[in-house]
Image 1 (cartoon, rainbow, N blue to C red):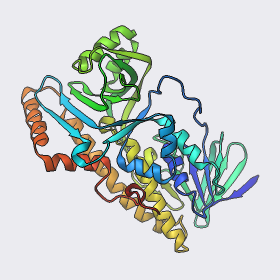
Image 2 (image 1 turned 135 degrees about the vertical axis):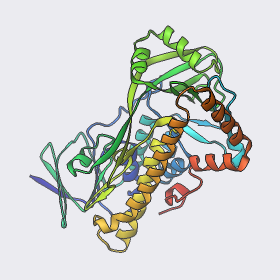
Image 3 (image 1 turned 90 degrees about the vertical axis):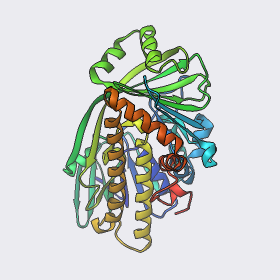
Image 4 (image 1 turned 30 degrees about the horizontal axis):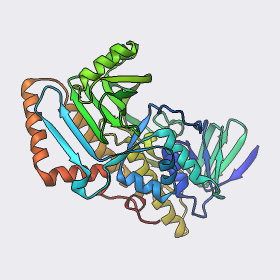
Length: 406
C-alpha cells in the first residue's frame, strides 16, 4: 500500500472543492484533492446548460483565490437589473444595480468555466496535489487522524477530510451522517434559448401556477439560459416535445417578454430535493456545499452558499493552524458548523417560504401576492435590504467574501 501524509483531503473537485483548495494554496498546509473526472477544457461555441448566478460575495471569493481573471478570459455575463413578476397578475418587482452603486447585481457563468478557472488558479501551487482520475474506496477516522483509501490502492493519511462531493456525498454516507430531506415534487428543466429580442443584461423570473421560470442572460445579446421548475410529469412531457412545440410553450409561459424563444441544443431535467445534514462536522470530517445542503434554485443561491462554506471553512482552518492547534478536532470545527448551519437553515427556510407563497392560483392568494410584490417594490429600504443580502453585501460573511485577505 502506497501511503501519503497530507493535512487536508478534499473529496470532490467541483466548484466548491476546487475553490476551497485554491483558498489554501498560499498556506503551508499540504492539500490533496480527489476527483473522479475533470471537465473538458475545450469550450464549445454553445454554452453548457448548467450555469450559476454568482453573487458579488462569490465574485470576491473567486477574485481572492485568483480565479476571476480566468473566468473573465473565457466567458461570463453580468446582469445589471432583475425583473420578477407573477403570471396573470399585476404583481411585479424590479432590482437595479445602480441603486446600490454597483456595476452589476451578479454574473451568469457556466459551471464548467468556473471549474476550469479554478484549475488554472491551482497551477504552480506546490502544496496542492490533484489526484484524478481517482475514487475513494473507504474512509476511517480516529482521534489520531483520518485514513482514506482510493480504488487504485493509494492511501491518504490526513488531519481533516472535507466532503465536497455533492448532494449524494459518498463521504457523508461513509460517516453515517443523517440527512433531513424533502422532495419538492418538481424538476428543474435547463436549456439554452435564443430570443427574438435582446436580454439587455437583465435577469428575469416569472412565477407561473406550475412553478418559477427564470431567463438568465448569457454573453450573446439574444442568448439566455433557462431554469424552469415544473412538476416531474410536466418536465418529462416538455423534454419529449420537438424543438418547435417546446419553444412555443416556453414563449407562452414567459409571457412573450423577449419575443419568440427558440431552444438550442439539448434539454435536461434535474429532480429538485431539499437536503440538510444533521451534522456539518464530525471528528476529522467536515461537509461543504451540496454535501451539507441543497436548496430550491428559484433564487439561484446554491453555489453561492457553497462558496461561502468554503471561504468560512478556510478561515477557521487557518485560524487554528496558525495557533498550532489540530485542524481536524471536532472542537475546532464547531465554529464553522455553527456559522454555516445557521446560514443554510435560514436560506432553506426562505426558499421554502417563497415556494409556498407562490404556489397555487387561488384568486385571493394571487391578490395578496400581487399587493405584496408591489408594496416591496415601492419600499426602497426593504427592497435594497433584500438585494444586498442576495448579493452578499450584508450578514456574517467570511473575510474572502468581503474582499479581505486571510
